[in-house]
Amino acid sequence: MKLTKIKEVEISKSTISRLKLEAQPEGHTIVHCNYVSKHKYINGGWVNIFPTTYLFHEGIYLQLLHAEQIPVAPQKHYFLSPGTIKTFTLFFPIVPKEWTKFDLIEKINTGDGFIYRDITRNESGVYNISIS
Image (cartoon, rainbow, N blue to C red; front, top):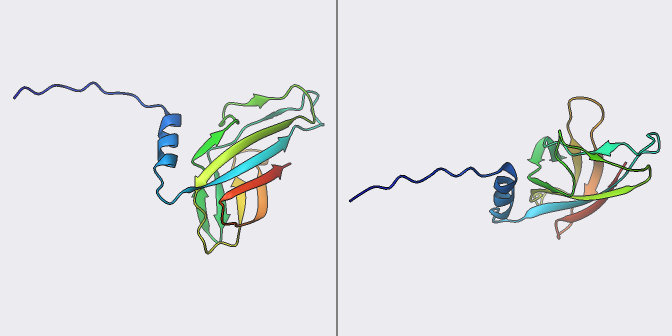
């Protein structure tokens, strides 16, 4: 029998994240976010999400799996004017049933990351929040 060498294929990080998300048999948590660009910046500034974003409850962290419609740091979305709304979606592992509330926390090296506290768990696993 003749053995054939298989060519290695490189898979992008975004494809790997998407596959991990789709492979979760128990589902996932979806957080739809609205962010308004700041008036303190002439053009509204910029926004991104760090991969070190997670859902948190009593010492347990659920790591961000995937982000849509927002660049992952170090990439940035630059606004054209202040007061502009940027809508994006974050995907996490499923929130455990015993959690009644949890926090969304973006841990970054400098400055302030997003923090949204006391999200009330629901049965759908889909949440809508506005981040300032």
